[in-house]
Amino acid sequence: MIIDTLIQKIREKDNPTVVGLDTSFDYLPDEMRAGVSDAKGAAEAIFVFNKKLVDAVADVVPAVKVQIAYYEMYGVDGMRAFADTLSYAKGKGLAVITDAKRNDIGATAECYAKAYLGETQTGSGAVRAFDSDFLTVNGYLGSDGIRPFLGKAPNGEKGIFVLVKTSNKSSGELQDLKLENGKTVYEYMGALVEEWGRELVGESGYSCVGAVVGATHPAQAEILRREMPHTFFLIPGYGAQGGTAQDLKVCFKADGTGGIVNSSRGILCAYRQEKYKGMPFDEAARQACLDMKADLNAAIKQ
Image 1 (tube, rainbow, N blue to C red):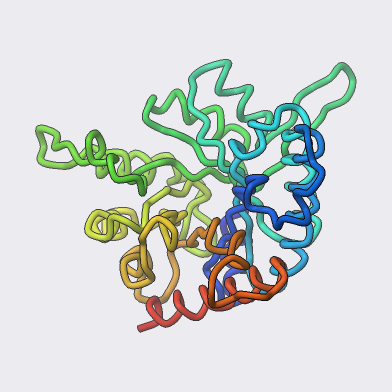
Image 2 (image 1 turned 90 degrees about the horizontal axis):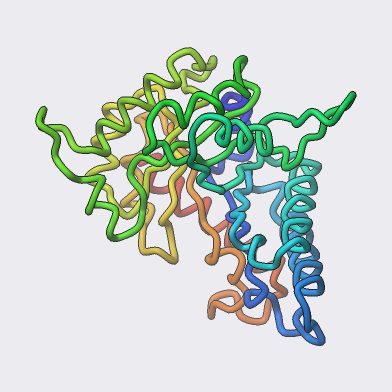
């Protein structure tokens, strides 16, 4: 199953880090932005940046998470860079998570599922539009917004991460509300995720239906880790959003398993940080990944 593959990659590299390729043109070094005046040029420069960064970190991290919004804003050319980035990362042996937070029902959800996890029939052939190992999904429309995605992974060859407790400050406006039974909305969503993934648990003990649980809310994450024993966590919020390794260690079990931690700007823009000053952007990104690995492991393995 794809979740077992991801966990094996994490073990091989002893690194629960996923690099977020939320690559804005503004993040690129000055020399890569010089002379660019249109969306096509920006998208091409972004893809060159992504390739060099992937080359630099592929042997030390197990996965990348490609946030689609950073490519959509450059139009058709941006989406080409998005697709090329997915393919390039997969070609380097990395697990690929598309962060698109798709959210719909019925036929529309089925189309989204085909685009990222399945294939679309074209007469006598078929095309895989944006082939990903995992896709982030917003489950707050209920089970009929989830089933189409599960249908693309009947044997666990693909996976999803469902939003449960998100890292943004205002998430509690909805997710922390108490229900009549005393449980919070995020706990109820967590229970649904556990149920949705019940038939897709791999040899690792985790399901191909994972959860997005933010590092910025450790008290809630600790509750979810206890209540979701078979659910693997995708953990945003580390670094630029304020989450620390000590905050997020509650997302992991005593054996050190249970999640993968995202960092985007902290790695993409590492070359702008004082501690990496003077290093080329790709070398700075690699060192930032190694420093993050050490920071996470020091906390998780305590």
